[in-house]
Image: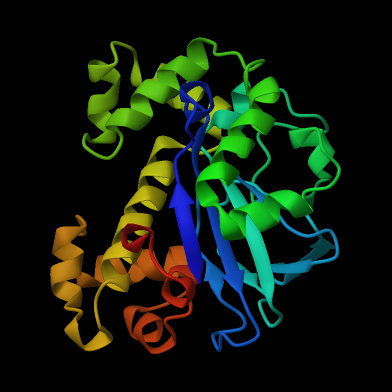
Length: 277
């Protein structure tokens, strides 16, 4: 279950980090052992015990490792191996944040990948067992410590005209049509699209679509399967009709509405939604 999710305390960190979170599955928690992780335009740094293993199935490409790892922005659905107990402390970065951060051994943009990392590269410490214990017992203090550990790294970050433009566009992306963004930001559509792709690795349409999917999954999570009206869902989230919604779900998740309701196998369904925290 997700135990907590909190924003950074530092305003400097908050420019690049959306939130910190902690999730733990114990041996007593009986759940889907192979949940799916839906597409996400944000990168997550996962802090885990050094002897704890992980496994991701990305379109039949199995990526395995142990300890801390990056989950880079991805427009593919990942299937996880959660058959064993685990604990993760996560750092969710803002969309496009890694473009402005000096990250060793990182080639921008890296998408649809999971990569093992040693914590000293990011946090400057080799042992994070104390931080994981703090996350379990004192979330507020854990957030304070994460702010302190990230600050020397984050303060070196630099914004350029591309990242500034993308930051402004992200503030409007869920409330304006893509064709309106150029006028609202006083630039050509081509300039905006090129900057967005350069900073995030995605097109505006791809990012907007992933944001819509996240909002829809949160909505569905809060409802019993029998209470879901797919025609209503299609209209609520801007689909032209139910067949359009079906094509969208199959494209992004590999699931039809019927199979989604039957499985309820996404991480949000298995471990809980953000709004409930």
